[in-house]
Image (tube, rainbow, N blue to C red):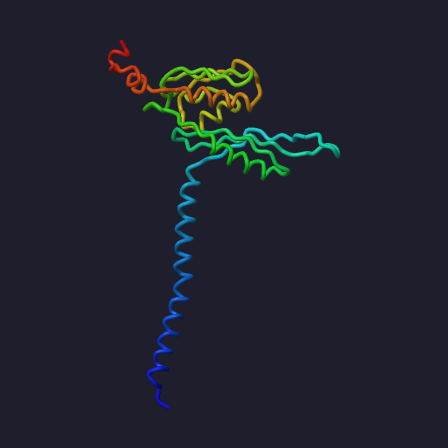
Length: 202
């Protein structure tokens, strides 16, 4: 039997539907692949370092609830750094929460051409005082503990830092963040004052 025009139209419609249904998953996969690659590119710029993991407890009605607290420093070594704290029932969950918290509290650090800081800065958090001072090229990062981790992930290569108060890693890291957040370049200071750089240096 020969196909009637109606049967031919039905066949062509079915072929079009099948071709569309076969192409759709390919397009979706391509879009997902692009999104995943973009997310990977964004995530590869950031580095994460765990400063401290402690087992903590909370007293509740039925007794004590044990959990873990992780202090994490996140930075891209290009002038952005953050400190985060995460608490969870397992270590991996605490670190994951600490990374998310650190990315929410990022600080942009002005860097000089020799990978140092423009001026001296003093930061304070609780009982911790941290003094950060610029250094000549080739000095390296002269610091210890959590302060060193913060400065390295910020991308600072030549700097002098001194802890003047508490030894607590969290307070020292936050005090270093306060000191870095107070830094300003000479150009920005001259612009705020409405004068030139020559007048500022004189």
